[in-house]
View: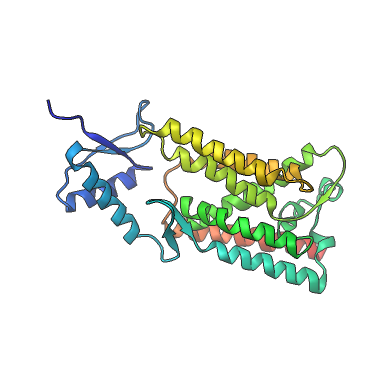
Length: 288
């Protein structure tokens, strides 16, 4: 009997169709397999003898069609988005503005002020830092995990998802704090990226024979990084926990949507929403 065909999981019908055309152009036959209870993602079925060539062709297609700012690191298929450097520049800009004109009083996370309707502080506080060491710590780790997040789910969607999860982490921190507190910093957003990577990148592997092993490994790695960094002495643990939990939930949700990466209109739309969620809260903070 001929060997059973091998399955290559895809994130959406569109991706499966694109990959099937790539394989056809290389003379490799492929059958599109729809999502079903046994395999909850779309996929391609190729003969066992063509599997390695099919994977290599798909990998080369992805390399040739990614953005110039995205590069593979560590292993094939793992993309790093250098657009995360723009986020670092924004952090530095706000740090400089705070030193020059004083933004802290207007933008710091203040539980009492938020309770009285100043919701914008859950966003503005992300851009403020206590000192240069605080900024450097968040920028260094944030550059890496945000770059991986943006490479995984798309430049615009990754940036917006991390920002929203970081803001949600501030909200959760309010509920976890026993007393009225003030806080500032991007560490909640950084921990949100860790949560997104731990859940989303692994959920994309569902349907493959290694999905359970990858799931346990990835979640364990994310949890370990959270414990090592998010629970460090002197840090605002509630915000870190809130950001990590928000990232886990949002990453898992996004994993069940069609792939958002590489779509210009989605990148532009998410970038516009992100820009509005930076400018509007600060406009409200400085105008009050």
